[in-house]
Length: 560
Image (cartoon, one colour):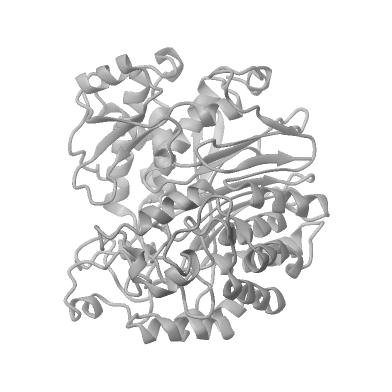
């Protein structure tokens, strides 16, 4: 499939009800919340670059989308510099504390790290360090850079003056307050959570009601004045660390003071003549690329988009990629992960050969080689491009807010294992297996497609859906996003893998998947169980940008 063919297909192929693809000649933005998209677009129009706009969007999301992200979470970046023609990756995920050990939990009687509360908040939040590192890089190497404090003013406004609660936030607040499952929910037991996200009378905020976060506004103002280091070395760091210590947690001010984001080399595979890029471990980006590496060995177009063969091979490729991921993925400073071997064409062929087109595989074992969230994509008028993903893991993260800061803490470190023989075992100053991974397709050394999604284990699967539907089947950007999706894996509290398929998938296709051995469960149409995705495509001939946002979320694709 050639690039020209992609852009000749601008008519809707998946249904007249779909949103139109957004097109713009200069800068373009897609995020999962319209206020964040508006904030990023305003920065671009005022003269900021793609990194500036991404920081403004992420800060806004940390205020208006608290069920999915906060300054207390982590982030991973891919940044393309149009001047140097260089693609860089930034790992802004935090490490466990120096006192965070297996014995720390065992001595408290735990065989598993709790999913919520201060004991779940055992890794330093990396998000703000990513803002700082990316800003410094862009300020040094890109034109159009804006002042740091200008990038946070929109987030400060929404925290201080308030923003209207969305249907998504109302729904996830009600879910979080469910008292029947204290391991995963019942966040009403945490006073710092209810003080902010629940009304004084105990009722949850309803759609359209204004939510104000005064402490968060003060924290953002300190960061605006003092820079990203405020979060790690200033008053904010001292407040967060003191609160964690006061509530029996493990993180200390020393852990915050010694944190930094790291520039790392992107990883890549070829896909149909494009170069697909992602971020390296501790991110599961290698699994996202492995799926594409496996799919290279199949003629998807002849199978037909939306056919049982298409869904079958996508799920089976995911199983093979996840087997490798689960064997190897952790902090590469602690384990020598053979990423190059795992992503080699030869290994992809071997994994593809294990797929039986007539039967679903069970209990896939890894071959020996020879990971709730917001994603956003931004391209500025100079061609600088950012694909970035930010999260605090579960909806509402650890469910606790650091006292007097408004910062909702993440529970990413609850994914560590307390088994010392596990590849992702808990050790001090270690990064955990991370589901976050932003993606980018390059053509002739330039960004062609930026894409990503919310959704934990669903991220590699949805990324593969977006790429195949656009590249292999010629769908428009918006149609590729809106087309029916699936999710192979486990939901919280489940011991076995299942296959969830959106209800718009024909029953005959589901029946054939069941016949092949897939444990299919029909789920709602346009459900965020399969994530909230986004996409940007750049026409290399005209430089027109095409972007889409997911109707499963509350985002917008906008440009100028």
